[in-house]
Length: 247
Image (cartoon, rainbow, N blue to C red; front, side, top):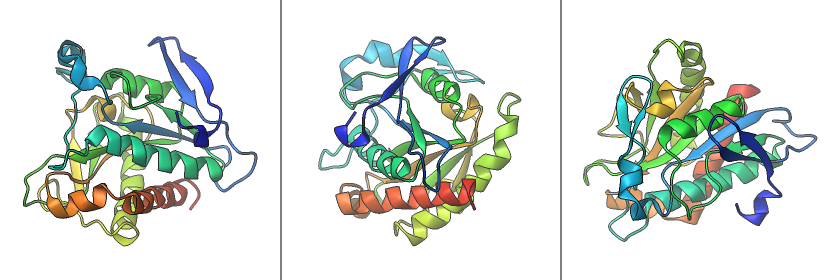
């Protein structure tokens, strides 16, 4: 984890055997007392271990692959690196606002964890809400972000309303603050309900997964690779989190 995030407090997840890094919360701030879960999708060395990625895990409804390598732009900027950058900018701002941050991985130089374990790591931290950060590899003619939402399956019934509440604020901020349009090819009006993803099926707290843009579209790719835009996107996420939790 970057030094700018401060010294991590390690919480040991006995159910998974993985360390969950959690930021020390500020004593004051608009998000003081709040816990936010962040899952930067994929990981930097996933490509080195196909057998690990292809192992089957239970996502709450069916079996799926442990994880994937993610996508990349035509210029070679990888999704895992983008996810990690956004997650760090987001975490820094949340910590300054007084929140504690719970993560699913500690660097962008490892492998995994699997998607079911990521869900459990966040659940273990008891966040007020969580966000899974991704970028899409869609059709080259398609633009924009999509917010993926959970579908009630019994165990996650209690998070559906809160997830949608967060999603409405996140959508408005991504358009108004980050200047990214809603997806032209995924979902409806920027929302896509997904019952096939472990992170959404297994969550015990309000959560969304955001595909921040389409890495295969040249216009989106130029934004996704820009530090200036990444900071705007992180600002948009923080604003949506504050509005959801504080009002």
